[in-house]
Length: 103
Image 1 (cartoon, rainbow, N blue to C red):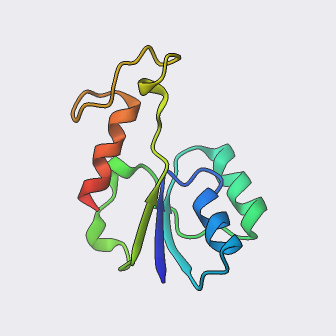
Image 2 (tube, rainbow, N blue to C red):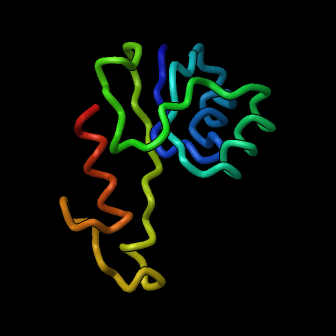
């Protein structure tokens, strides 16, 4: 199974698939946080191709995948984020969720 991890962070979906003994290959990730990328590499031994900012990905250049995973920024839907919401086009960090539909 070929997997793309959006908002990859340290690779929690990668870890879950490993623990489930799934046969998979990470064909790409989208992550902009340098510390998350360092943690990802430390946990998994290497860093897959990182397509960076999800708003700038040309999905025609990404290899085909069977499973698309994401852990989008959820600060704006919490009390800490003042419940700004995640409406499409709002410009909130949590509204980045809507970028997933382009994939």
